[in-house]
Image 1: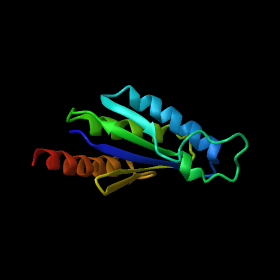
Image 2 (image 1 turned 180 degrees about the vertical axis):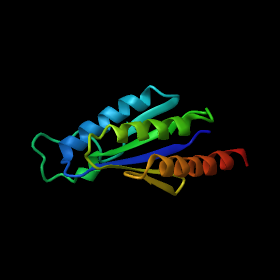
Image 3 (image 1 turned 45 degrees about the vertical axis):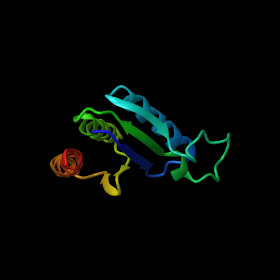
Length: 130
């Protein structure tokens, strides 16, 4: 498959420190999959101590470099869905972007998320096969 997938995490009421930690936890989970790398997006470096004025969105970004496995993108999206489900009632959202195509996962039902994921992955798998 190959390519790069940009992720932007958000959580209701989360400050920069919280988003930085959440992105780190998700990054560790994604590194266990068949991906080449997962890095923080530029501007997503460690927030300075006590940086309450820092834009929280700047620290919640990840860049996933997908491997050549056709199932890599699907595995990443499924891991994100599991991560969202562990939000313990807190509204979390993950925005995924690959090649200008965007998918936002949040509080959709499992069936709706499954359908959206299939469409998103299918578009990119078809583009790789063309």
